[in-house]
Length: 396
Image (spheres, rainbow, N blue to C red):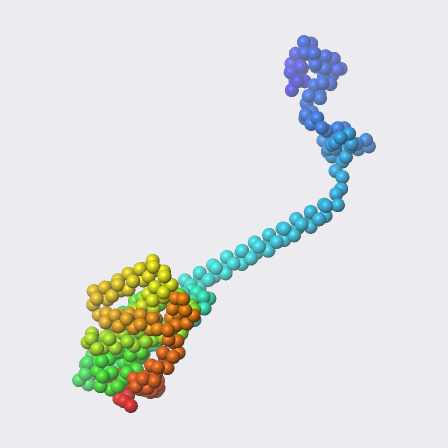
């Protein structure tokens, strides 16, 4: 830039010959030095014999009067190895993170494809096996109910003309929403889409009282009347499943006894003719939670459980078609069983071990009558579906 400015004044020759510029006092050699980048004061001239240009030469530094040029250190290989190890470890951690994210993604996809599968995996991972088995058993029986209703409808349509045949959608409505199709068959009003499982194992007051089919007190706890019924019960069982941790025996015993006592309370109070569902057993587990929270001095959790129990009873009283007496009986039975079988605060054991309580109940006259009746009913339900619903006697 200085040369261009000088040429504009006609003094190019002076610059080429190294003459000073008029009025400037700056020599052209100094101007060439000004064009070079400024060098740090600590830098010195390159090592003699270095043939590389100045801009490519390795900078050297002067420290306490000694000249050094990048001396080699024995710690350099160790630093390189340490850096490589850190990079390798970082790569492994990144690979594990990607694999974990991929597994979570596939798990979410599986949960989306199969509703409820994530709940079962969670229960199994937390070793809550009894709750998981109960959920699977309820779902399998519910699907069997739908299949049984469809076969009943197909058997009816096979012997009827086309004008009197019922659509297949009737069986689907019966299975999903509990709306059964009734027809007059041989002078009787028959529910065609009612599954043989419901006919043989649901609560039926005349059959229990007159035919001795007391097995229905237990088997009705595993049947459900529609999609929303089973979804509500399974969801509530999932929320109560943590109570199983540390007390699987009392947990299962409470569910069974509360379910039977709830059905017996509903039957004695004359709530209707037919009933089914696990609500009595679930209310018993709610009573189990009340006792557990109270004994562990968890006041806030006890208050929340008490509010949930009160709300459930109020909801059952307001909704039509709900056997609220089964809820009341199940809640009271679960509370009593938990008082006897759960570990007391400050003690190593419960007041009554649950196997001892089970043996006492089996030794009672009702227990000696119930177990054989249950075995005969299950065998007859497999070999002759629908026979119990037609009034088969199961007396002693």
